[in-house]
Image (cartoon, rainbow, N blue to C red; front, side):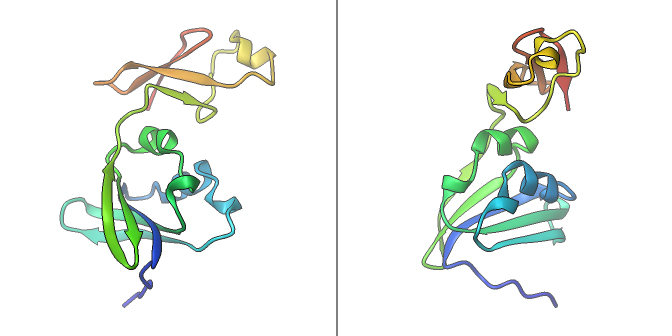
Amino acid sequence: MLNISGLKEGIVLDHIEAGKSLEIYYNLGLDKLDCQVAIIKNARSNKMGKKDIIKIEGGLDHIDLDILGYIDHNITINIIKDNLIVEKKTLSLPNKITNVIQCKNPRCITSIEQGLPHVFYLADEQKEVYRCRYCEEKYSK
């Protein structure tokens, strides 16, 4: 049996779709942090069958909730203090995301101007469709 110790203080990202934990790890920049991070892949789940879990030592200041909401808005965020869950947060699709995805339109200004941020806004929440702020190019997951 695998044993990952509990957190005295930190956050646990739970109910991550199986296989998405590394995408989250790199998009949130967790590889650049100097704190403990535990990734559990393909954990058994009654609700999901399989799921991933990420445990991060420290506070929520390390986490961009917009990036997390874009990647998987079904994730549950558990805030841990003194070894106890003191708060649970749920996510939603963010209205705007910056530098998470890139515009694929070769005529878009972001293809020419290298310093411009890649900004997308939520165009259709039901279909999870985002559009480029500059050229309206559609991006869906």
